Amino acid sequence: MSSITPSRPAATPVVLPVSKAAIWLVGTVVLALAAYYFIGVDQGAVSVFGKDMHIHEFVHDARHFLGFPCH
Image 1 (cartoon, rainbow, N blue to C red):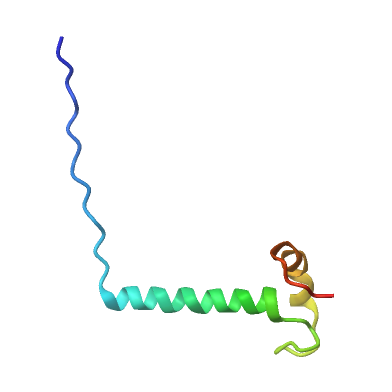
Image 2 (cartoon, rainbow, N blue to C red):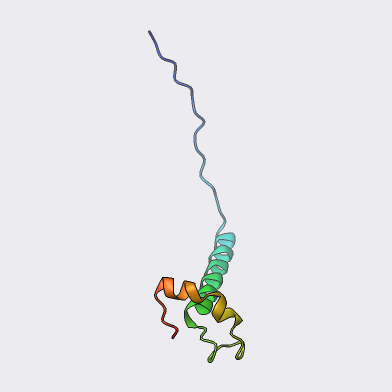
């Protein structure tokens, strides 16, 4: 008895030009820093956006879950 193994096409790597990789890296860093600010730094009283507490209250539980003190 012989077993027939199906042939698989060779996997080809994704080629990403350096310019596009740099754009993705910068975009990712900007989004990560914005998320870090809104979750970890924005306190309402020292907020860049004034004394509006909507952002603080929106991410309040995430702050505690991630270990950031806020009160």
